[in-house]
Length: 444
Image (cartoon, rainbow, N blue to C red; front, side, top):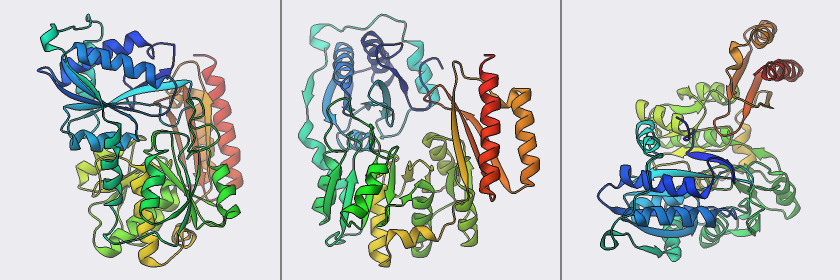
């Protein structure tokens, strides 16, 4: 597809396709595919300055096409998915570039069930993008309304995903919302459950989303948690669908470890269904730790939609990525950073164990991830010099390591991941392969 990537349409604001005229055409095309006889669409966003601009353009396109618009303002992506169902909408739109900085933005869709669109539906929308924008007659135009206060329904839903009567009273939590979409609902949910909270990254100004805060930059959280003697820290990303946590000593507990904690607890309670699904980037320690406990583990391609597809194929309900994008399908339809964090908190409260102890049961093997910026995407394994570097490292690993090369679905990057038992060899090997990829990129 030309415009839709692994997570909707995304790019630098002011360059194709992230311009107002494109958003208007996209709304018109989406309306014809997703609500051809009229209907209702929910529009949510994160805190980027450009969100107002795209919100207005999408609103105009939908109303002109005869679709009623409900504007809910800043709300985490999974909150939009939930409210789509709650409000009986035909579909919904999220204006967000997730973990990217404010210069970028994106537009992604959910269907009426709160699920991401299939490739086939996205292709149908793309085929209509070059058509003229539809404007219905006056009596058939849609209406627009703001429903900001209805976000409390999502807050109540999040709180309902942990056992009834469970309280966070006596738990001190530092919550970092990346100055993004979760800055209102996440602190309120935790406070309502009785936690004492210390908020950081909860003062968005339109330009500071994901800027030195959140799940992609948790260093401030790591300093703050032990500094204020909190029990733990929670870091969401800009649109609230990812989470990483920090233990009382300021150590990161990443998505693999959170997935391990949830899988073991669900296995113990008899609630685990099907295999646990990770990705090709998931740490080898997760796979081995789950195997030791009799839990099947499978790897999907990177991207929550691939994890979701494999869970649906295998009848599983728990999966996720190292980045902290975790799917608890027994609780909600899509990855939700806040709900995932609440599930971990519930395990802590039920077991009486601190986060550090729960996470320590999974060994993390040395892993290096390097991003090589490229002008144009290409298949790195098809390059002779890269293939030679990979073969050389695999020989030195002797079967005790993994190498993953993949083009990013959201940025002009080739990701080089190397993992193994020998930390020095992992670091050296990753640098060698990244250098070979960088050299190959110059010929493209």
